[in-house]
Length: 255
Ligand code: HEC
Image (cartoon, rainbow, N blue to C red):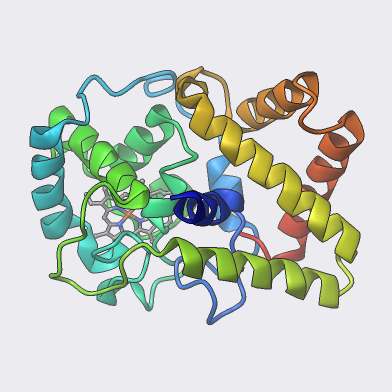
């Protein structure tokens, strides 16, 4: 159990920060910083602050599974790893939604499903005129369940099941690459991994932070300062983390 938890933690370690260098991370795009930019984009007022009114119960997840298989898996893959057959040629590539849905709030996910990739010039379709509100919220529940491993992926379109160990290995590889290229030092890689781990643990312990309002950047800052306050990390580590995160983002190694 402890091992499993460690794996899960590791998997969540660098949630939005997987390697971009092919072939490690099929779900990440290649335009240098694209996904990180989208995650930090301002959410339109119409969507900002919305929270999921549909509980993630069995019936919602069943509806979500069917909707996902029909409309999403071709690009995002059966397991939500961003590796569906129709997505392989797309640039930016389909997001690994099983993974990114763990860190992005309801309003972001619902906005992106509703309006698609038009604001970012991606081929993510807009679903607001095709799927009703309940369906779009069912999909938010389902994507999260895929990443948590509480549902088994359907086998229909293709793509791997969400695999925490593989994800963790990719993330470690990204940091190793960054060290090799002189973007960060080994010590900074260790600091980054340590703080990211603590941040993910915090997210798991405080799921309410996900929908506490504010932007992704504000949420990240709030988590860091909570960790400093709790004595889990030092202020210096929090500062270093933000700096390293920015450098990794600018390097193009991290989406
Ligand atoms: C034609 C391929 C395609 C289909 C079909 C598709 N998507 Fe996407 N999706 C993408 C691409 C490409 C991206 C990455 C670019 C972007 O974020 O705009 C993306 C991004 C997303 C994101 C943003 C994730 C993040 O971390 O930023 C969500 C959420 C999402 N898709 C959900 C869905 C859902 C739910 C469906 C089915 C209703 C679906 N997608 C169908 C191609 C697709």
